[in-house]
Length: 349
Ligand code: 2NL
Image 1 (spheres, protein in one colour):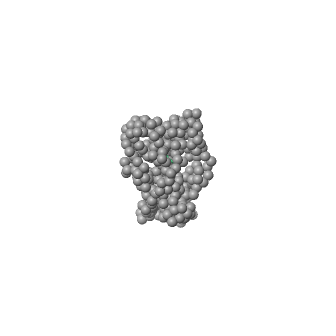
Image 2 (cartoon, rainbow, N blue to C red):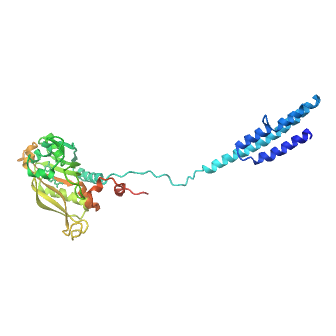
Image 3 (cartoon, rainbow, N blue to C red):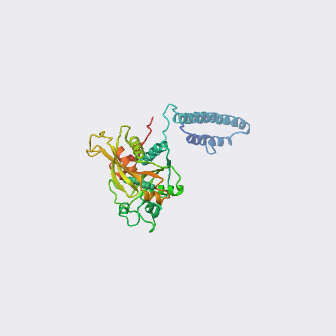
């Protein structure tokens, strides 16, 4: 076979091979096959040895031309393959700017926090300050100064968790009110609410929890009266249960108030007609309150002949349970997200 025929055959084979190559790896293999050291041309080069000297330059020239032709095929195919890669990438990575954006998840405040903040707004609007204090309290502030001396029978109802003989987890936030009075010594008016967590030795069930939240309120002035108390609590009832609510006061007993009253709100479910929510009575008990006992005023540094005050204690869970129809107090503390998320204030748009 003549050299030119041999070269022609290599070119024809290389062309049809290279055109079918599907990726850059295969292309590199093809380049090695046709142009590499052990490639197709190594056989051709052997023929050169048998050629007379004068024919050698011509042989070299046509061989190189053949190589250039094949290299041209390779580069052409490389362009095609690289363009394919770019096209594929472009089609995969297209951005559809009309797609909806990714939604941010927004948390939700615990329903007890929401109720407390709503009450804080109400009371701030009536000129109250919000006071906080320690959850670990001394017996003197939690009991003694509130007219609950050691061995007083009412202490049984507020059995607590003791740290030492004289320190305990507070059973109500009245201790914060005691601290506030002691720190203000006869300064008036005192108008405060004290929200916070309190603790009582209790067996947990659907309506009892050893830990719960309270909002206590205290007003001390020259004559903060039962009428003022009643007006204030009517605002609470309306804020929590709707503008048409009524309240009624029933006599009761607390060691720290005298007289003491239990406060009922007209049922928000049946508007007072009687239903299963109010157990047929038309009224729901929502809180306890009264006129601050003289012994408490005196113990906290206020002359009981000069000053008078009223106080109240609201159970936050009870308020939320009535308002939202929650039937198990443990739902507030077991942190089931399905429960917590129900109280989202804002809606998705
Ligand atoms: C209830 C009843 C009440 C008070 C709390 C109070 C605080 C001071 C002085 C006098 Cl510093 N009283 N607090 C008064 C009456 C009732 O709570 O059933 N709470 C859940």
